[in-house]
Length: 88
Image (tube, rainbow, N blue to C red; front, top):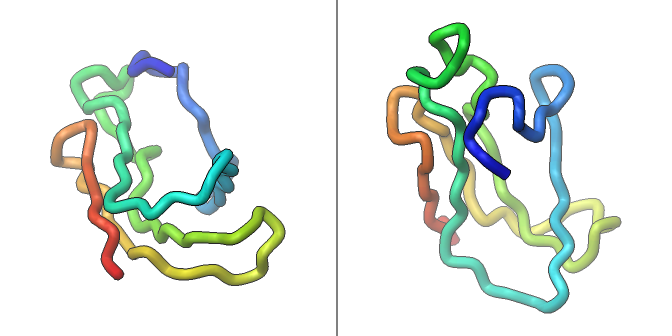
């Protein structure tokens, strides 16, 4: 992946979810989210950037619930790459 406009992994609509399956069990301490900065955006804004999001730990991709690891807000006025610590 890169940070050029249009080379993103976009979600359709205003909500979405992503499941990442790892080869082994991990105990994360933080998560990062990166979005292009406003200065690289052809429109001059980054309204497509994620805002409020939650991260859950699952035992498998079909698990209905999960352990909430944190609820976060991406700061569109902040740095393009932002780190969010696990809250539990």
